[in-house]
Length: 400
Ligand SMILES: NC(=O)c1ccc[n+]([C@@H]2O[C@H](COP(=O)([O-])OP(=O)(O)OC[C@H]3O[C@@H](n4cnc5c(N)ncnc54)[C@H](O)[C@@H]3O)[C@@H](O)[C@H]2O)c1
Image 1 (tube, helix red, strand yellow):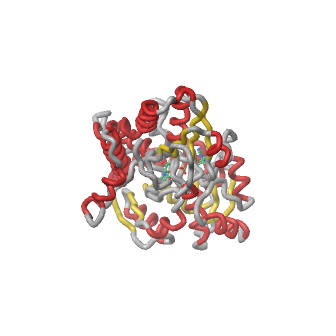
Image 2 (cartoon, helix red, strand yellow):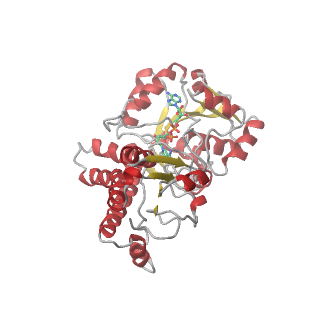
Image 3 (cartoon, helix red, strand yellow):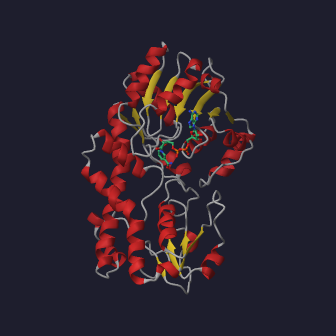
């Protein structure tokens, strides 16, 4: 129920994004009255029409329902940040072109709407932030003279699984005050049963450690892949043997592009935080960002690339997704455009790239295929061309 002083329960700032939208939908599904505030006019319009701007499993029918029932509305009006007791901030927090974090991204976005803040509000930061940003925002709120509680409650869902994971993952709550802890816990208890309390600084590091841990695991798998492959050995056969019935290595991932808007960026945030002395983080970047170069280098040794047409299957940053942000398939494409005769691309899910061709045309016209994203649509695909398939999605091995 909305607090009597406010017409709505929750305003999600940046709520048209990949993280904000499923969250807004999930709160509305639980009965909350939710407003999405976003600067993207196009996405706001789509949302108010009950249409998802991107794929997210299970979200489309719920969005259509909560919009039709009047429980979720979207707006570009900054005054909307004064319309609810709970404000949740989920704007993007990318690193810049030199891999520097921008600790002011969130304070800047908040400043633009700050005149509409009201006493008694709870301000939850949910974007992944550079350590210290929660304290910066606490000072910002104090300088405005507002009586607001501030909490950092990181989002830990994997894109595509939000509608399930928002209800199954425990929620980390970091706030300096008892009121902030209680109110943020009460808010997220509407979605999930388990709340874990940390200080804001612990919570900020918890989120960065989580993503970096995953990024480094992918990097070691990719380096093992390259080591094995350089000796003509199939990493997937070796990994299969290692993980079979052996719990201590059961979480060893397969090789593949470790890309997307989060893992690399957050590893670089942590590197900057440790004054660029985070050797393991930078080493992981070298391996993961180097995989497309490695694959093309191996292909060049086996094939006359310069006279060949190469087709890339899958341009999204991961299998099953339509999201191309920071996709290594595009890096692969750039390298191949320099080395190969022609490069063709296809993807069954991506809708924002008009250079993509139908799968059938890419299969027919290409001399060599490289899997860029292991979409389920490619599983077991029968092709009569050589294929470089690090994920073994076609099932014919991973060596190149
Ligand atoms: N994508 C993921 O899987 C994932 C998972 C966990 C955490 N995160 C973190 O969540 C945050 C958001 O990521 P995302 O993938 O949803 O980003 P996104 O780019 O998809 O969404 C951000 C949204 O914020 C809006 N926006 C930008 N500036 C704004 C402003 N000043 N005022 C209002 N709206 C504004 C944008 O228009 C966009 O709709 C990032 O910090 C990211 O690291 C992402």
